[in-house]
Amino acid sequence: MENREEPAWQNKPYTDGLTSAPGDKAPEWRDGEYAGHLTASDDGTAGTTDKVTDDEKDTAEKPEETEATGKTDEPEKKPGRVRAFLKKKNVTLSPKVYFIDAMGSMALGLFATLLIGTIFGTLSDYTHWSTFGFMATFAKQATGAVLGIAVAYALKAPPLVLFSAGVAGLAGNGFATAITAGGASLTVTAGPAGAFLCALVATEVGKLVSKETKIDILVTPVVTIGVGVGLAQLICPLVAYCMYWIGYFVNWSTDMYPFFMGIIIAVVVGVVLTLPISSAALCAMIGITGIAGGAAAVGCCAQMVGFAVISFRENRWSGVVAQGLGTSMLQMGNIVKKPLIWIPATAAAAVCGPVSTCLFKLECSGVSAGMGTCGLVGPIGIFTDMGFGLMSSLGVLVCCIVLPAAVSLGISEIMRKTGAIKYGDMKLDL
Image (cartoon, rainbow, N blue to C red; front, side, top):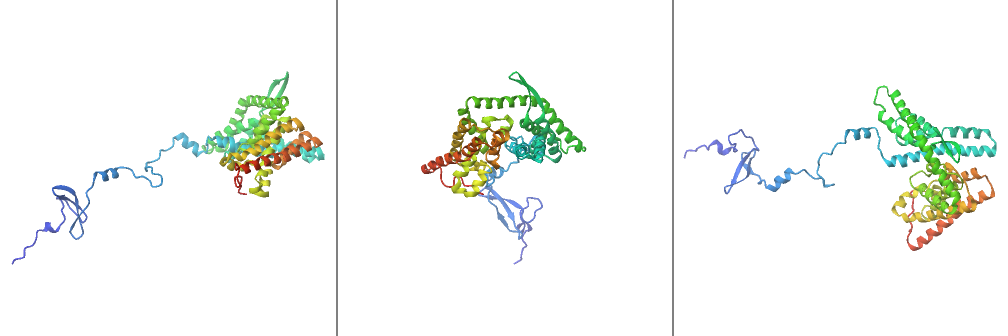
């Protein structure tokens, strides 16, 4: 029987009239309906693929979702030109940066100049050593410039902006204006408040122009200093006027109503000390003095000594040093978790304030009033204003150390007995 050769098309994949290669697909019909494609394999045989359903089409058309977030992988919107430029220049427009970070840095600048200068002045008065007097003079004269640099440092300014901000701070701190009070003409300055505002604005504007021109070494200082000095001329008279009358009201009202104002000032300034805000800068800005300043100093001491004592179980002696001679701000994280732990120290401030204003009449002023027992600056400030007498020494011992410790410890023990405060609530990683 003659062997007949089969047609070539039976051994080749379906091409539908087109050139094909292994792996090409051909239509497949099942029971008169289109079911998919036939796939040609390398050996010439055909395989079938599954039918593409409507659900699969919908799934293919939808963007994929990420497993972690469940959100579609859509392209993120790019920030606008202005926002991108500000981000590039590290201008955040953040209240936290301006009123917490910058003011905290300014407080350090105050400590390194005005406060330490006051301490040197006190040492000079008691030791009669002229070197202390020279140190006091130069430290106080550098206050404005150092404040400007401190603010710029907190804002992460480039070097040229950082150094130029010193001039802005100097202008803001020292720009004088005359006001009339009680029939007398007084010359006042905006002080630390003016230095803060002028340095803040000048630094942010300086950062915008920094390294934007080929003559940056000229443009950046000119713009930064120009903005700072111009702003000092524009706003510092008003700032000086406001700060003077705020300080005058606080001091006068405390003299008139020592009991109630003693409570208010001690509690408010003490709370500000523990918050991530500078109580020292606040007291310096409003120019607090007299028994109002004494109440502020006592309130700050109550917070620091109070937390050092009531958290002794958890933190031992390292906690006493860190909080008693450092800052009660270390407890801020624990306060956020459990606000009740703030009650003992705040109650101690409310008790010590009127004892200071009504009984011992302790006096303090400026930065020292907002420092508490940090480096014993508060007590030293009281001695600076009142001298080393029996009443001042006894007042510092009672209002700054003994009474805050006793009141806060008594209240905290009651709260521990009732379960309001538990072991570990005030634990610090020291």
